[in-house]
Image 1: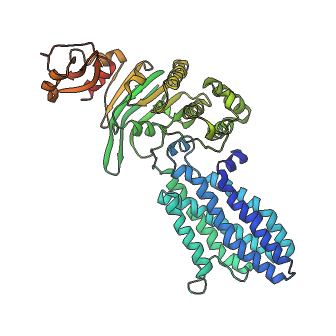
Image 2 (image 1 turned 180 degrees about the vertical axis):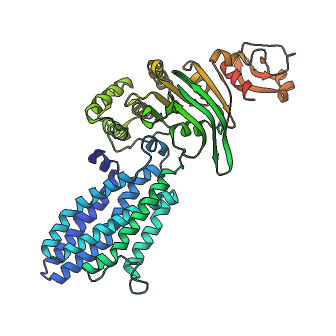
Image 3 (image 1 turned 60 degrees about the horizontal axis):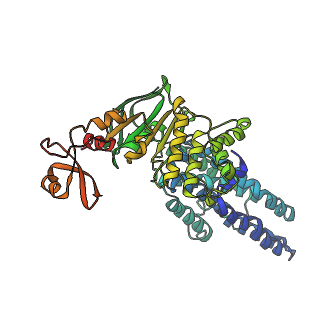
Length: 209
Length: 274
């Protein structure tokens, strides 16, 4: 699949993650960097990228999936190639690559951020695959967005009140040990959702007239 | 030859296709039936869009593969932000047409639908008829052996409908073309055979002449006054103004009526599916 065409199919909605990940967040992080306070820089980059990058990965999937799930005449997109999982994985790779530059910049400003990039890659994979699964589970992009949104709010806001093992948000930065012990399960969960999502995709029969 | 044997499809527990049997060779077939007859369900099952069904669908003795089919749904929402050429490249990619052939295929199909000059226009800037032509062009990519069109002329002006008919004429000799519609006049001139569906059953497969002849002896034209006397025993086909009075065309089993006229394809369809 031509990458340029894949991205163009997202329309102007693709500008939203670019706006946040490539313009807004870097501006905030670099402004903080000017204070020459390394801790503040790391904290700022952690907060902003954890809050937005995985969630915006879901946004990309929602935008992409809307033509398959919600659009009138959606059956045309299932005739030749019903399974969309490979397209979602390609989108994931494109999304990660488009965000890599700024993560390299943040890592140059603070080396501890390099591990955070691994954290974000895992989370984004989890988010994008979960979105793919939920879109076919609910047969609706709108309904699928609700659990994604609620989980993001829970992770960021509910950290102290609820079981932090289920939350993805690390307020003090991620460690190598956390990546292995906690986020390994996110990878396992993501692959499980991918497998189930593929099965739901293959049996999808909601064609909109 | 496309062979469909004992095709049955259920949605939850409700059976919507009942043991459909069809053999389709090269040529143009109209699939005619009222709304809810099962036309779209039959087409989607052939296309593999429904995975759970019983029965067999075979093409030349083998399972049908999706690269053998070109399909245009009733509502073709091409990706509006793309240019025409990009949209066709999108479909060519998912049809796995080799990169060496893609540009050539796109040029060929755009010439067929007379849109070559608009290949760099965005889909959203095209008229409804032009968008439909783009939809037809994508069905022709890769030169598939079977073309399936679901209500292809709905919303098209007469000139676009004639253009669609001309494209079908050009392709009919080496393809199986299935056109679903509930507009009889659309397929009257295009189709070699007409498949009549009702409530998930095939009522019959006829040439246009054979279909018209099914209503032979049962079609009448009369004044409104005479119609009012028999309206409970007849099917109203059309009411039209003839000079200064309204005339009613009906189909009726009542052989004693006067005003008998020659049947049309539409009359035959209404008679078969009454």
